[in-house]
Length: 88
Image (cartoon, rainbow, N blue to C red; front, top):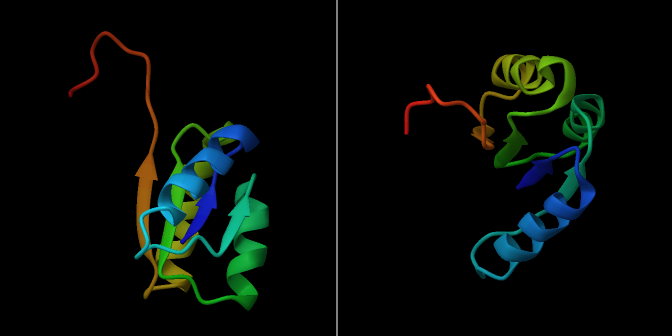
């Protein structure tokens, strides 16, 4: 699993929680879509865990590129949006 989150503390907490599961291994962390794509060039990753709130629609752009270039990688987009009209 490669975690892509722009807030280092949250990314670190996610990595610890996932690694503690035992059957999940976090192989890397990136704080930007650009860093994630650089990592993916040289490493095979089973799961890409992306924060939806990356700046400048970064999550959308990253997932579009990753879905085309790295078809074997599963994409999981997480995050919380503050909205009174959000569907839960």
